[in-house]
Structure formats: C-alpha cells, structure tokens
Length: 135
Image 1 (cartoon, rainbow, N blue to C red):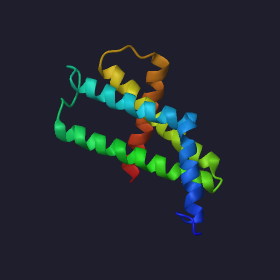
Image 2: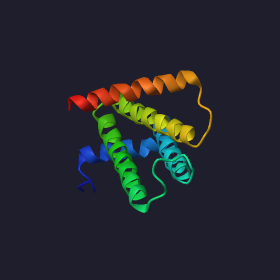
Image 3: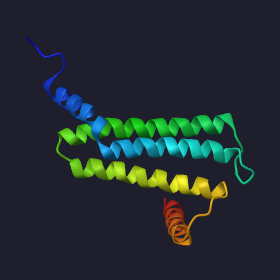
Image 4: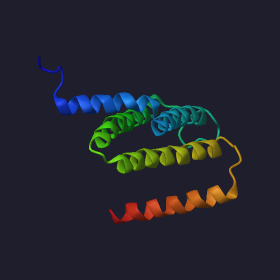
C-alpha cells in the first residue's frame, strides 16, 4: 500500500501539526493580531498620518497574510531539516518586528512609551533609513 503523501511531506505535515503547541508560533500569531488591531484603532485617532482607508488596509492585511503564510510554511520545513535554531530565529525576528509596530501604534494613539524604548526605536529607525539609502 502506498502512502497518501510522499515520505518527506509526511514529515513536514507532522511538523506542521506540532506547531499547534509551539510557544513561538503562538506568540507570533498573537503579535500579528495585536498589530492589526492597534493599526486599525490608530487609523481612527486624530494623530494618525494616514486616516482609515480601505486600500491601505487591504495592502496591510495582504502583507500580514503573506508574512503569516511564509512563517507557517517555512517553519515546519526547517524543523524537518533540523534547522530549529534558524526557524526559531525567523519567528523571533517577526515577533520583534510586530512588537515594534505595536509600540509605534500605541505611541501614535497617545499611550506613554518609556524613554528607553523610544530611544531604541529611534536608533533602529535611523539605521533602517541609512540602509535604505544605500540600496
């Protein structure tokens, strides 16, 4: 009797099933949802640079869905290939990116952000701007 899926893909499917109990994946998904919610609420505040706009919202939603698709498909493949450290690093990178975005959204909405966090984000933004200039 032949298996329903090729041998390698059965390992990937098993690894994907194991993601249900993975703390990093759960935190990642919660971070994505929190960023979506804070971004939507931010767009309705008076301090927002861009007001609520369906085209902007659709682009943002598409971006979030693509990132989620990337993470949720690459993670089990890297897990099967025994690149656990790399797969966890990718997920932690996106968690950090979403955490920064959430804090920026909260700051625009008027929530107080501690000064040590603000200075860190300003340095990261300056570094990203310099890297964009060289491209």
